[in-house]
Length: 425
Image (cartoon, rainbow, N blue to C red; front, side, top):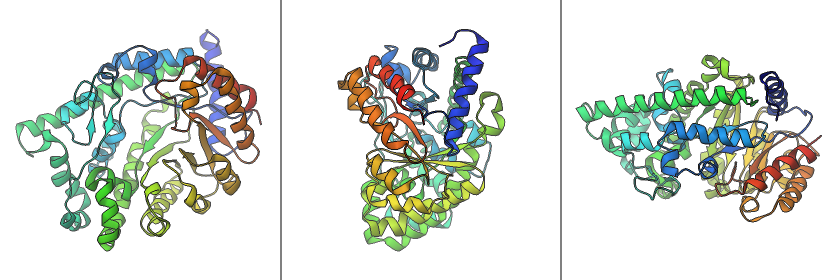
């Protein structure tokens, strides 16, 4: 890469045009490489996961080291686990909360709140273990009625005190201090992220403004009832689950709008003006078609349609195998939605969807860990040749959405070279 500031600015403008053009479902010069950068930087910088999620300076420097040593088209740093969305939703009546609370929580925030949804290195796990989302049941079946009557009140007065030990006694000194420290840690993380974003710009990386939200059934499974109980509820108490799904649509839309305001207040960070809304979806793989069609798809489509009308671009991360439901995506607004698959056959998805959506995906993560630069180049070429025939495509590294934690650096560089060589339209 070039080393003077002017060249970096020109590089950033070129990458921004490539990435934003693709986001808008337009063919540019070539397919962009835009990975999620999760925990790979901790390994690459030789720091423990415990340090990575608690020392924001070390985390920032680890991200920067990766950004300097690898030449991606865009950079998506992931600061922790995306559990912050439940707090933003609980406070969705207050727009500014979408800016003050990060959608990600870190080890420090976990220690402040002592939430029961997750486990962290250096706390419940060894210092070099990856953090885990374990969920839990924090709402009883008979309490669906309270959720339906007033979802925001229920989240604040029932859910959060049960799911976070430091919130167990609302109004107490411990409770008040926990909220204060939560805000303080959120501010520290935000300031670290801002420093990182400015440094990434200096290194020639365009940044994409991005909000975040969920869909009702995933929200219930993730934060309220656990996956197991949610699936059982759909068979035993389907009417009440359906009503709960309906009342959660509006709060989750407001969560998306509130978190997306970053594009308004953070213009200095962004060369790209199109704002995305990241929506990680996972319960779909566990549903038979009848339940998917009745309890999952209508709320997802309503949220997507509303966001598109607000001139936002939903980015759906469809975890698991979405193959049985690919055709439903043809009901999405054409050219307005990005779809990233995890296990779904990308060629089959492309054959069905054509240019209706912007597809995102990558090769199997095992290639980065066990393969060689030559096998990486072969796999990347094969995928890009299949994807670029019809429609637009964003290469994200691996099928998990980013860079595997144990990826060999030489294999990652081979993937970058392959995208540059074989990604031209």
